[in-house]
Amino acid sequence: MGAQIIDGKAFAAKVRGQVADHVARLKSDHGITPGLAVVLVGEDPASQVYVRSKGKMTVEVGMNSYEHKLDPDTSEADLLALIAQLNTDPEVHGILVQLPLPKHLDEDLVINSIDPAKDVDGFHISNVGLLGTGQKSMVPCTPLGCLMMLREYHGSLSGMDAVVIGRSNIVGKPMAQLLLGDSCTVTIAHSRTRDLPDVVRRADIVVAAVGRPEMVPGDWIKPGATVIDVGINRVDAGESKTRLVGDCDYDSCAEVAGAITPVPGGVGPMTIACLLANTVTACCRANGVAEPEGLTA
Ligand code: NAD
Image (tube, rainbow, N blue to C red):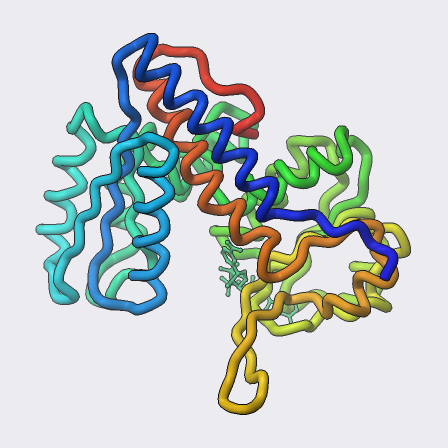
């Protein structure tokens, strides 16, 4: 295997350390403790795990964590009322509504009811517009984590050919905007792309965000390219066990790539670290205090 492994777990620990340092300074110099409110509607097991680990890590970096667990049949009016209350709560600097929401709730309406300045997921339409026009915004956590790893590995990304596979609002589109912001030549590929292997072979940077286990084989990768694998797919590992794999076939991609993120231990840990980074950034902006450097786009 030739590729250097980009260790997202170690990098995320470093980012969380930087966040913790900044939180400590906010407390000692300004008497402010950043607070993150996480709203979970329903009992989706995966969402419960995510919310628990977000809460634990929020506390570990010294911030306040406020968890709001609502019944699966919570009405839209009650959820919007809670968000309105969190929007005006001065102790709350970040608000995250765990997705997906139960089907009777309008996700767009709910997300767009969050104060954009507290929208630490970066999904509010105002933040999407700000990112698209190169203005200061809250940046979605997963693509932000990918960008941080790419900058750490390459330094400047200027002029590089980047292919993002996947055009979701959560990963693919904001990832493409961020790469464009760092002066890459960006192609967004998706399910209707003609000759995907050929498109991917042109890339110095490949970001795979599809949700199809191991769909990108090594012979799609240009020798020396950097592969960022966002996919998290649970597959059968025999003997009634499962294992996690990415959207890239790790072994064959690692043979040709210059650098690659593993699954697990690549993009995943960076996502929560960036959520914490966004919360501290939101807190600094709300209080007119200098933002931590290197923790946003
Ligand atoms: P999504 O289902 O919203 O979007 C998938 C995209 O892939 C779509 O735009 C679609 O056009 C494209 N696609 C589908 N089939 C394709 C094909 N055959 N060829 C090319 N493109 C194709 O998914 P998402 O929310 O963007 O998530 C993508 C993956 O990333 C999932 O595995 C998800 O679990 C994972 N994910 C990981 C993290 C993390 O923290 N690591 C965060 C978010 C999502």
